[in-house]
Image: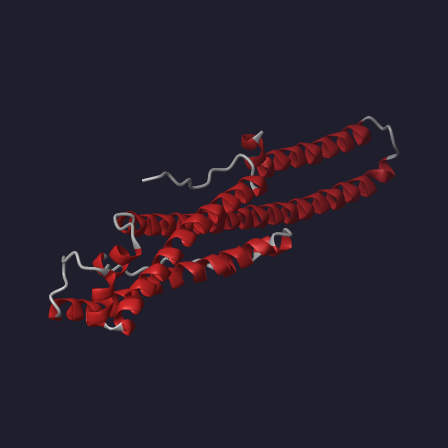
Length: 247
C-alpha cells in the first residue's frame, strides 16, 4: 500500500488521460454513427474540451497539493528525528559524566576527592523548537514545553559542573595542597577546621548539587526521549525514527 501511495499522482494522471480519450472516442463514434444529429458536433466537442480542461486543471492542482503535503510530512519527520537525535546525544553526554561520578560514594569523597571535570562544548546540542511547531496543530503543544524545559535542564546541569570545577580548581585544590590534606585520612572536623567553613561546605554542597542535577537529568532525558519517539511513531506509523542504544 505504501508503494501505491508513492505513485498516486502517476496513477491518477493515467486515469485522467484514459477518461479524456474515452470521451473523445465516444463523441466521435456517436457523431459518425449518426446517433445524434450532426448539428450537435460542436456542442459535444466543446463539452469534451471543457471537461478535459477542467480535469487537467484539477489534476495539476491536486498534484501540487499532494507534493506540498508530501514535502511537509518529510520535513516534519526530519524535525522529529533531529529532536530525537539531540536527546540521544544529551543522554550519552550525561551518562558519560554519570559513570565518572559513580566512583565516588560519600559526600566527603564527592566534595574533596572528585577531580575537576571539563565536559566538551555542548552548545551545539540544542533543540530546534521552531521546527517542531507543527505539533501544536496536532494537539501536542505540551511536548514542545517539555522539550524546552528539558533543554534548559541539560544546560543547567552542564553549568553546575563548570561552576563546581572552577570552585574546586581555583579555591579548594590550592587550599588542600597548602595544608597538605591531599590523600590524608583525617577526621572531617580537621578538614573543615583547616579549610574553613566556606571552602569545606562549599565543596560538599557544590558536589551535592552537581550529583542531583546529573542524576535527575539522566532520568528525565530518558522519559522525554521515550515520550517523543512514541509520539513520532503514532503520528507517522510505519516510518523509521532514530533509536537510542545503551553504550
